[in-house]
Length: 371
Image (cartoon, rainbow, N blue to C red):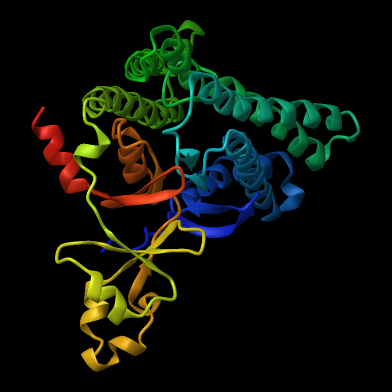
């Protein structure tokens, strides 16, 4: 049995039906902004007193808005291409949108990537136009800061290296040119490492060229951003190489049969058709996999109650994205993508709307080890 995935943070709502979470690390970003902006605002406006730190809180909220708009743009674009979107998360590293990318193309991947920075560019323009209507003071400072913030997010995310959106554009271009997504990931990953070095140089070398010493803030920002970029770029390189191996395994070689039961079926009827070792998958009225029967839950039901017990009473609902639409004659990329996206060790497979069976992480690993 695979339980539902652990929530990535506090759910605060949804956008176009996609759940939105504030990650556990977001509070650190908010505290840093308050610590940086509060004292400088207090020095400029001593009349505000402690309210000066409220300006820092407002900046943190504006950053959150900018990130959520950015990620919502990714989510809406992915949905427009028919790719299921699982969640939007604002976290320590900014934000990310989790969606099933197994059926994406170079073109759709590029569009999904570019709309994020474009949404920030639009917000920057709107804020700049709105700045003309303000009369200075704290409102003008906030609107102007929002414009600069979004312009910076748009420009930074367009840098040509993974894990940034610009890196996704590089991956899509190489993918389109070579026909290999794995080559695109590796090239974009190395571009990401190059971008990391240049970003560090920007923070650490630029001050020297300007005739001043590197201060502790420059060093902290350089390390913070570089760690995020280098880790993402390295993960892309590893992922590309792993994907090359995954492409060599056919789905039919790791697909296991499973017992499909309807949501209203009695446990006694299901067990009468069950073969030891089979997973028992509950299908909704449309025939789509939604849950797994839990053997431990079945064990707690007295045998004389089997005929009175609905299978849903002993099943565990699975996370969105757990069921994968894939051709059994194709590779296992869609299955592996789903496992990574939802954190599942067992996924259900359908083809042309018909349930085929399940694939376990253990079987995938064994197939890869044989290569």
